[in-house]
Length: 322
Image (tube, rainbow, N blue to C red; front, top):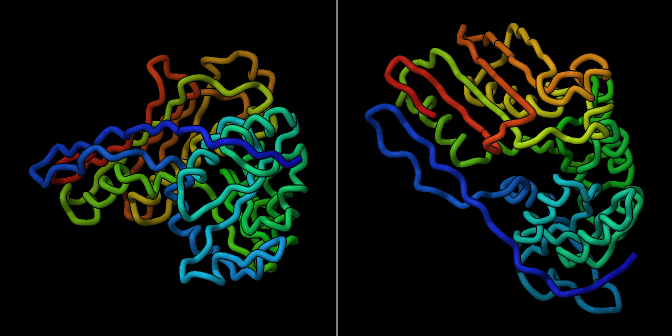
């Protein structure tokens, strides 16, 4: 489907500032949030490709200026996270969203109208094979990620995939190998490494402001549980939610884990208790011991009645930063 329409205004949010409980320079001032991929587009800008003349005989931007043209992006999925990515892409000068797909085509159409995309579809394959698309953002349910990564690689399209890359280790390795074999770039959306507040905490460790780190604590709580259809087949709370905190613990510690202990329970949404393994958990705790002998503690929950909660804290020999 092709459509045109006026661009609508976009709202912006703000991050809380980082705080430091030690005698050190103050944390950075409040900064406007770079929602998800607007931060990720720093490395994604390297996806720019040379282009020939545009359709209809018109000359391309690259032929008339020295400015690299934006990365033309197709988005698979018009659910909550797909819309977050579309908002970020639409506000970034280095990217141009071209097409969005969703199995319920009315959602794709609504997203295309909201963000002024020229095309929409009910087919992920149409996004992957669209001739105007340079890179594909995979925002579909987790169980489809690995196959869609392989399809993108086969089509020669660069990929940004929402976490996780796959729901098990063999499929993860297979998806990465497919991207490597095709020579395309594959990045997963672990965007907290680009967040200025998390970067502030990491800098407090790297620059010795807190001294030697003793323990890192991470907390992730969502405002409300996801629908049953999202949880089923998604790999469970450790893969589709705590993965951000697991990555952040490695980022802050600067080394790899040696031992991990994890436990979970169903405290919020009793409907998911019928599912298998960690898919039946909506609340979980993880304890990690790293190569440097330090520990990290992670707690995640799919519902916080007071709203979205995202925290990182490091206790060191000289102070604490959070």
